[in-house]
Image (cartoon, rainbow, N blue to C red; front, side):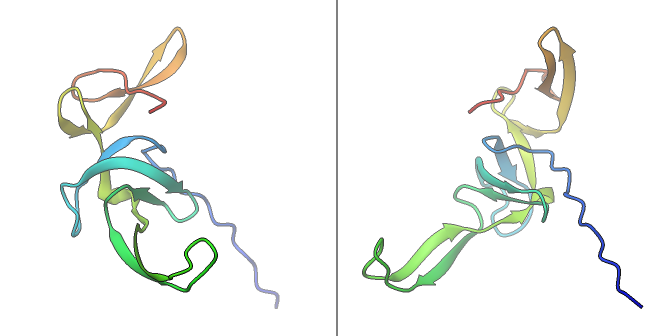
Length: 117
């Protein structure tokens, strides 16, 4: 019998690259920062200055000395919430339909969230 391969459905993530978010669980709870990268297939996001890990790197041309480098690691997208800078709190996203099309807005105060940061 042949084994069937299942296609992995990419996760639907509530934040986009460039959004300002707050980490709500884990060791970095309360940390605010921008989303650097979104990994749809794994449902993870990379937030600046959050979930820092240490990498031991070999010497290379770009880094001839090598050594220990700190960098951000991906975390589950469920561990972050969008942070509205107008009402200074975490919020969910609502979608408003306007003349320009669909616009993301803060659920608490109703202010439109910027698309490009």
